[in-house]
Image 1 (tube, rainbow, N blue to C red):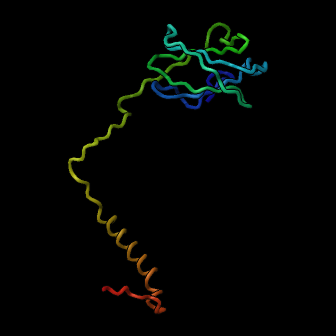
Image 2: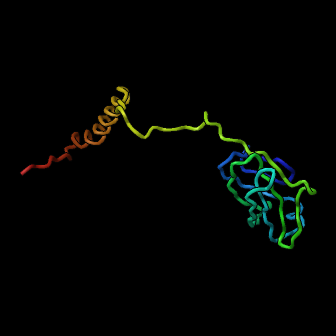
Image 3: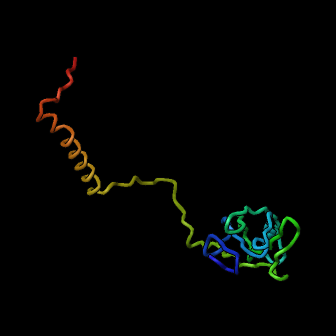
Length: 152
């Protein structure tokens, strides 16, 4: 998904506590920089500022980061020669969505009552086993190649 020209994310929306891959094909890539760093932080005050080296590919530079529990993701790019792409001084700022509690699936790990298998499921298993035995042993019985094991 492209949110800003030459910046792509591997997801439709940025959600807190998830990883996101950022791809950059902006001016630093187009100018032939060999090294590009993603300089990023969270919230209005750029909290938890971190810088990671991006991996160079044919399509641009890429880096994967973990999104923290803040309202926004702020970032800019720096080349190995200290040239900056900071969106003309505005930085790149994207909203981070909160995880909706209604969408979180919680599972009970404690089994209070055993689950009963549906009768149709049990009968389908019995039928499969019967067909398997017929296919396997009937030709042997007909040809006479079936030998019973003799118990001692």
